[in-house]
Length: 308
Image (cartoon, rainbow, N blue to C red; front, side, top):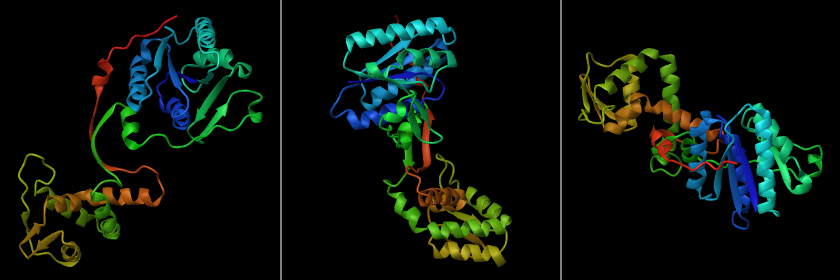
């Protein structure tokens, strides 16, 4: 069995990375347990979020240890010592992995001093998200195999960890993905055109707004009357948009093909440019048009805090 001890802080990602990297490698062959160390009540919401997140992923053996203080070193050290002895007695063959990345300095130092005992299968690790490295805090760490570090969260789980409830998004699994890639070159050409002609951008945005394309309850109005006949750069812009099948125009009006066309020309094209740029840059998880809400309801779940 592997027992991960996570010290709670405002940033949950460092704890999650080391736990999930290990879980992905071992959960098919070896049991895993997670203990969440909470100081005082200040970060109780973060504790509950992480507890729910592990449960959501299928890590069911999760316990919460409340120290009732985040700054009293003596009490924290005693709590760490009691926990270590308890774990060693109940799980003599388990590997203990304390993640010292989180918590206050007194919490991190107290638990590190107790759990840094490689001879008793207990190690202290530190997750460096900036340099994507997991370090073992021990003078003999250079004699040990390096710990793996790789992506463990997709966009949905990352948002969940930050209490954002996802309703929908567009990514490489969506039907819209191929359409976006197909018109990537055109979207990029719009970026160049609007950069050089800021007035065209304002004009097109104003026309698209008149269709009610951004109002979910208002009826879509595809036809927009022009104040004057298109000419020069504006005429050229409408011509290329018509060639793309996005609209039809005359000297007196513009008719957008559908609501999606109006949304695209009303700045959705810019989101697609960013989306395609991120994909071309090799970013592993890319999404756009993310829709959801901040989910505070999870905080209403009551968990029993185990105390010593």
